[in-house]
Amino acid sequence: MENERTAVKSDSPTTIGRRSVLAAAAATPLVGLAPSAWAGSRAHPQPGFARFEWLGTAGWRVRTPTTTLLVDPYLSRFDVGLAAGRFEKEAPLTLDEAAVDAVLGTAGSAAGAVDAVLVSHTHWDHFADVPHIAATRDSTVFTTLSGYHLAQSMGLPAGQVAVVKGGEQLRIGDVVVRVVRSLHSRSGGGGLLFPGTRVHVPEPPTTIADLPEGDTLGFVIRSPEGRGVLILGASDYDDQALSGLEVETVMVPVPSSDVTAGYAERLMSALARPRTVVLVHWDNFETPLSNPPRADSVTRERMDSLIADLRRHSPRTRVLTPQYLTPLDLL
Image 1 (cartoon, rainbow, N blue to C red):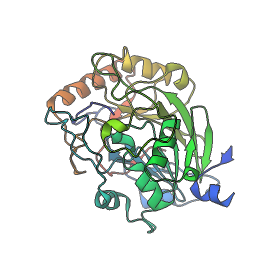
Image 2: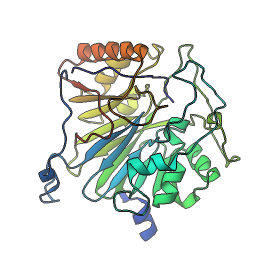
Image 3: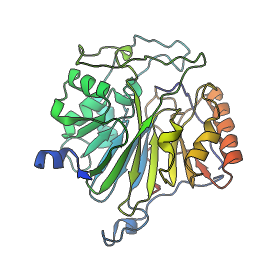
């Protein structure tokens, strides 16, 4: 979980997947996809191959003509006291099935289909809804060893959970996903919220503290011709793991502290100054999805500072702050 609280307007290969497994810038506006972007030869994909929709927090829905991926989908967005300054570490886990269906579409419908869910780490604001989503939509979950055990404790069969560590390159439908070793951010005192891993199936979790970080991953989503979007789920990273990824876009969580030294500078250098940065994990995720996303003044200041740092170290990179469920043409 990131303690980022929210909202400034920026100016600025093995074939894998649940179904296949069972079978065997400154002032830059957000760009939507035109219907024509989905036409044309699959042998010669055009820009607009994949539609990215921000689900709030660090969550994404990625849809191509044949495949739907979710990354860190957290849609129940229940109150744990963060916005009120009274964080409740023992806040009970709450599943809002209606909120999940309202965003994803009902299970069993064409609109609600999900091929795979990618999980960066197992804090509640990234993982709490995942077992329910995967169970109701017959999806494979790609996650850490902690996620593998936690998902089973929350009722998801082991056959629907695949453990990844970083370095894997997976084909899921018509998308290639590279798993990237990553790191979670730290608090102002240098500590990690809910540290630890789950090395066996625990008792079913009942509070947010029962979902530890459990190691952290990032994911590169690639089009058939190799364009790449890197999705980070937490505001730290491993420079060496990012070096040479050759991505055009990176989803960057806004840090809640200055403990991670040189955050923007090292990130831009490791990724060879990507074309686009999309800021995430800045919204108030204790409120329902509603545009414009909400943010408090402290997070606004942190976002302004991060945008300034990104521009200083990568002047040609455009910086976007997305709206919920608004299609972005990034791949």
